[in-house]
Image (cartoon, rainbow, N blue to C red; front, side, top):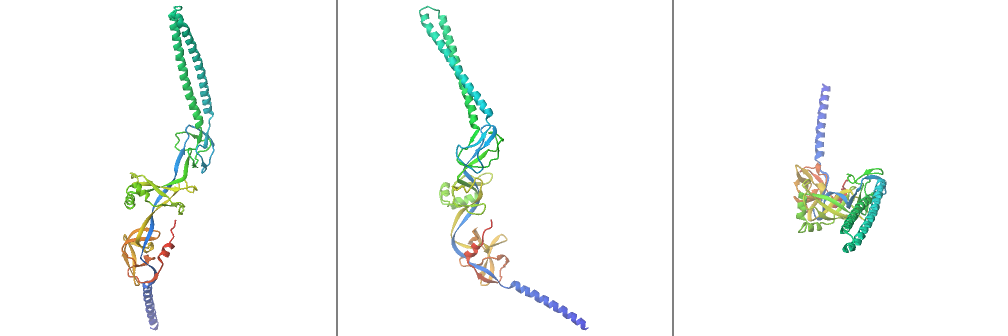
Length: 398
């Protein structure tokens, strides 16, 4: 009997301790915890709108062979700076040179034929001139004069044919000489040599799909980016100016963020837009120009264009203070030591800041971070934190 009482007592003690632990855990979960709080502020801030961009040289010329031939020499290297007219490639010219030499011989032969024809014309003219007075004095028959005139016309005709043959021979020679010259491939502009996909011994021609190389003039580069139709309409309505050209002039200088996340040292100017929507992409292409005297940017670079957007006297909160639930953006407002969720409308987000257009007023106190663990009615220990310190402490990850 004594042992039965001991067992019953042990079981009751265990149950009591388990219940006490659960109650203690529940009290621990509901216990107030410290949370950072900030005051809703009114500020004038400059944000930005971002667009992916691709970089192109101001001029990009594909270099192609004008004639078919084998590459004999490659006289430049990839990335080399070249001048207009500088020799880039030489093609094999043995057959071309032989053709040009033969054509030149044809011109010489045509000159000889012309000289002979001219001599024949002169002789025929002399004969006509000799017979005229004799016929007039009835010393010789008129038949001889007419025969001499016919011979003169025949000689003149042969001279004309010889001159025509020379013109054809000269055209043949000039064409052959041009082909020899075309075997020397020169740079069409001042610029930077691009990729060299073909090496010595490669057969090239004017119909090749792949160019010998591309020469890019990159003292100034173009950054191309696109706006969809909605963004373009916003641009038209929000940017000062009567015409599109005036609106483009009123876009502030833009920043180029390179692929490594660093900002390019020069600001760019948006100078042009296509003015029509591409039916395939539904977008409009814009072009920003950047100075590139140091040649830091290359044809084919990618990055992001950031266009500044100014907001004056707007309500701002740390972006970490916002959360989304069932499609609604909310923040936790603080009343004494109690939180409750309220719906807000975010007008824009940038640099870890959310611009609030509805739902809060200046001076409201909100939870600044760690909102995912809170519920309406949660008790907290308010810990004021500096707004700018919180925002600047969050660094973007690229």
